[in-house]
Length: 108
Image 1 (cartoon, rainbow, N blue to C red):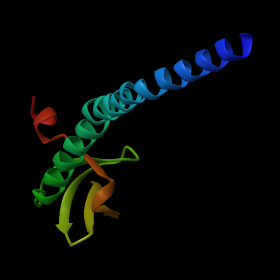
Image 2 (spheres, rainbow, N blue to C red):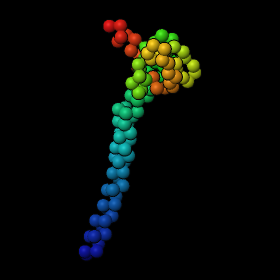
Image 3 (cartoon, rainbow, N blue to C red):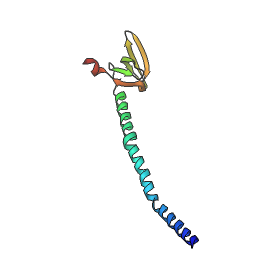
Image 4 (cartoon, rainbow, N blue to C red):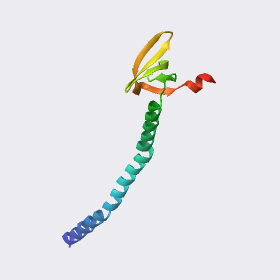
């Protein structure tokens, strides 16, 4: 009698576990949706804004590099920019290192 009861209990437990598998996959899917909404989507938006900023640069814009160097654009090439830093000092930096335009901030 004991063996029959244990066998029936094990069989019903296995059936209950199979039914719960759908809820697990829904939870995993929800985790990925939340990650996309709060992490991936805003990062892509920020990358597009930075790409737009770098493509719209023109001579005379005042910019800041990722290293904190302030300068005015003297020349633009495909992947680099010549910055006039102070007096006649000029630096060539990668276009990807430019992070902010401070032309409007400087004039206020």
